[in-house]
Image: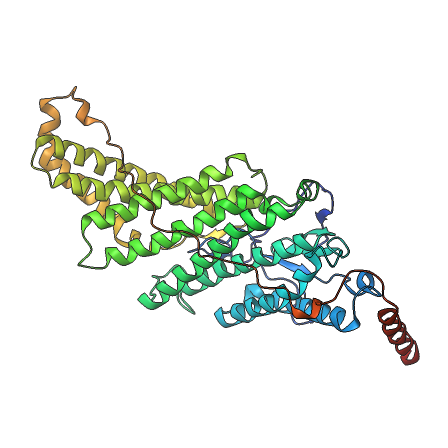
Length: 442
């Protein structure tokens, strides 16, 4: 359906904000070889709105004479290692994603030292980040911005890892996804972890950042955007659980209906979180389209199971309501297919995914069951055409069972002990000796 050589990433910002602006994406460095970035049309199981990666930043000069040379070297080397690994993330497998996660976890306790009041260094270093898709950069002199960016990247990597797990390796493009039950449980763990990181970012990190600094944030770091993606991750957890329940003979219709209704609630909440956000860029538009598609799909399944539960009642009214639900499910299924196509065609372009999970069978079940039930109970509609029972019943509401996984920032690395952010003679001497050594080598 799509041209393999077409670019999937065409969006560039036309405005330049404080500290944020598009760089000129000429070449994409992979392992230092300067290869041009290959356009990749991804397939989506778990939606990753955008992956941001750190760009080399000058850490040495702002901190020279203020903290020890060992501390500066460690901070610089750990960040440089993250930068090196992050450049190749789109070509990575699950093990490479785990390696990058580990590098971020090593770096975070050290960079946290810049945020402490004792260090007085929160705005001393300008940190640079860019979106991997289009090289749009945002650079701010804020250590809390760096911490937020690291935790945000950890969340995006968890979503990225979940998507890699669900997409078949070396399989036919668009082919059926064959994923083990254990792998699906790993995906749920990754989604809960991503949700926890984003939830913590909203409630514990953003509040540390002055409003003036947040005005310079790119759209994908808006509070509502972070909340939406956190809840989207929970919705996709329920999507996995519902798929497992649909394959389990012991799972009752009531259990499946409850999961489907929970999924609708989560996707609806995520969509609502974006109501106050700027979604005019490609990332915002793509996320809105994804949530619209998945919400319609979830409603179709919820009405299907709700109809089957109602049909178990013995009264004519139960059968009429059941047929109305199944008819609504059939209509929503058709709309969801169009919404899926709109999502896939929006930049960055993604492949049309094969039905998977609970939807693997719903594309056939919903229209078939809706038709058969109407054939059986259609005469009830003819008896009382004006009955209020012929309206679509509301879906039942259930208490939501999932919460983001608890996340806490690590303790500040012990290397920051006794750092007060004031120039020290001994530290200055260390850097002067270091400078002399650099001159002697030239």
